[in-house]
Amino acid sequence: MDSAIRDPAAAKRAAGYQAAERVKEGMIIGLGTGSTVMYTMERLSQRIHEGLTIAGIPTSFQTAIRAREYGIPLTTLDDHPVIDLAIDGADEVDPLLRLIKGRGAAHTREKCVAAAARQFIVVVDEQKMVPCLEGLVPVEIIPFAIQPVMDQITAMGGIPVLREGVKKDGPVITDNMNFIIDARFETIGEPEKLEASIGLIPGVVESGLFCGFTHKTTVIVGDEKKCRIIP
Image (cartoon, rainbow, N blue to C red; front, side, top):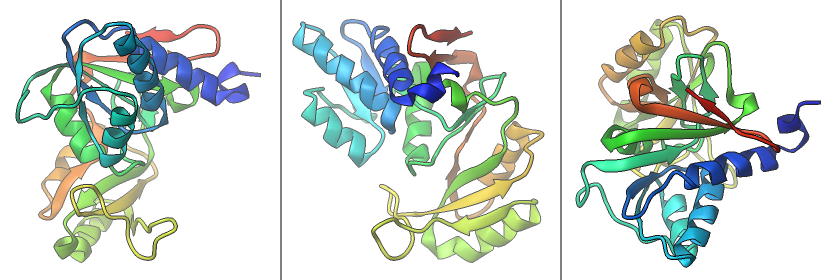
């Protein structure tokens, strides 16, 4: 049985820790949102206690809260519009290192941070590696434009569903006070084209397709015994 299936937490920990080892003294780093990056912060906390000096830019309230608990100093893109690297997870990664992100509803801030970074490190377990991107594409939208956006996504071949809260009545509210639509596409033959087309819809803030960072992306695929680095 594949080790990632046997113990996904161990695989995520291995990938997260490996990413933390790539952080160097004095770096400004983007801190993504999600369970795998939490392991990165866990290891960074240990390294800070050992004398490492860094600052992080969180991509969500959740990440900011956890970073403070770990004793990781925080800063902002206003203070550091260009940063050394960003570390984040992904929901899907294809062979060209294009991504789908956003199941944590933080993809807009994650994309801003990834764009600002000189290097983009993506930490995943083996199950996130796919032959082609497909399925749900999260789309952050302003509440004012929900129906027109859903209509246009439908016209593009998607099936849009407003994401509902868990333990909360009504829609999910992002850290930017917007809504999330999960748009299902059975196949995504041209991810770059779809990302651009969704981005042109009035009312869309950002989609969870990440196709523009492949030139600076390194993927760390976690395993219980040894991580795989791509490329």
